[in-house]
Length: 229
Image (cartoon, rainbow, N blue to C red; front, side, top):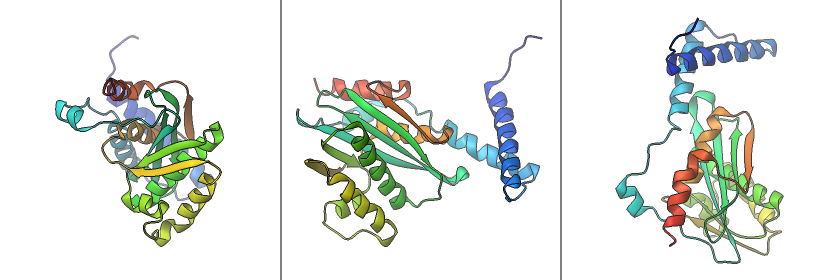
């Protein structure tokens, strides 16, 4: 029979079924069996985080304040951001690579299945960005992120917190293959990368785009490019 269905109710039912299936797999591997109430509560938190990824359009004030600055013609700009998903005890990473015209070279949305603190997931975001850049063969780039603590450590201005010292050391080794690498921090011009990080809430491992745009960041990419003219 035909009928009209509320999208949010369908999403809730489907996610509860997914949660039940996931918990059964956990039990088979020695995990704890969750009660029906626990599964519904987890589902509610999960959907709340997922719907938070559906960002509102930028306001006029945000358009005036946020300005993405392009790299020099012979280099690339990599914006990296991390996001925490408390309900899943996981984190998301967004990586966006653009040229001097603001054109997307590649993009990455990646999930890290570990309960990380802010400085830890920001460090992992930079690590993912450098690894991704290396995989696609880019050598000369500027990498921007949100964490002043991480970027000061990468630039040698301060010692890294002990919880990310190994990650910071690894990033320096990874970026050492490149002939020119600069680390910058900028909290206002990372909106597309931030959306890529939040997109990871609904994926299992990672999704990569090469020389194409993810539809949910199209508006912000267009804005960044229009600001260059």
